Image (cartoon, rainbow, N blue to C red):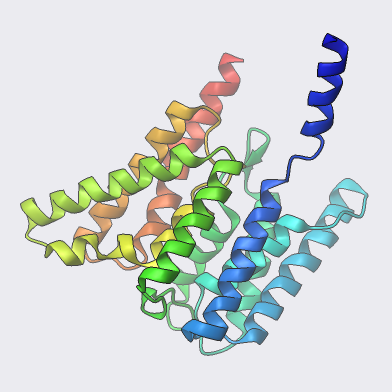
Length: 269
C-alpha cells in the first residue's frame, strides 16, 4: 500500500510545470496585450531583435563553455523582458542590452552562480551610460483596473510557482510603508508616493525581476530582508528624484547583500 502511494506521488511530481514556462506565458501575453489593446510604444521588431539576440548569444556561449546544445528558455524570457522594460527610438540598444544581459550572466558570477538579474544589470548599464538612447519610462503603462488585476493575478501565480511569493509580498508591503514615510516626513503627495503601486511598470519589476530564483537568497528570511532592503533603497532614491530607482535599488542590494549572504551561506555549509 505504501509502495503504491509512493509511486502515485512520484508520478504526480513528474507533471509539475517548470515556473519558467509560466513566466514565459506571462510576459508573452503581457507584450501581446500591450500591443493590441494598450498601445505600448515598443515595436514588434524590438521584440524580435531582443529575443533573437539573447537566444543566439546563449546558444553559442553554452556550446562554447559546456560543449553542448541546449534550448535557451531562460534567454527567450530575458529577451521578452528587455523588449518590455527598455524604450529607445532606435533598435541597436535592444540588441546591445540583450547581448550584455546574457554575456554578464555567464561572466559576472560569484560562488557558483550569477549575482545580478541579467535584465537588471544590463538595463542599469544602459540607463546609466547611454541615457540618450535607452530609457525605461513608466508612462507607457496603463493604470486601468482591468489590466492591473490581470497582471496581479498572473504575477501571483508565477511567483507562487517559483516559491518567491514571500519576496513579492515583502517588497510590496515595504514599498507601501516607505511611501507613507515619504508622504508624512518628506512632504511627497500621497498619490504620487503610492501611484507606482498601481502601475504595471512596478508590478512587472516586482513579479519578474526581483523574484528571479537564481539571484534571490535561498532562505525565506533572507529573501524577505532582501526585498525590504530593495524597497527601502528604492524609496531613498525616489526621495532624491533619481529616475529608474527600482533598477538601481535591485543592483545595489544584490551587490551589498546577496553577495555577502551567498559567501556566508556557503561558508556555513
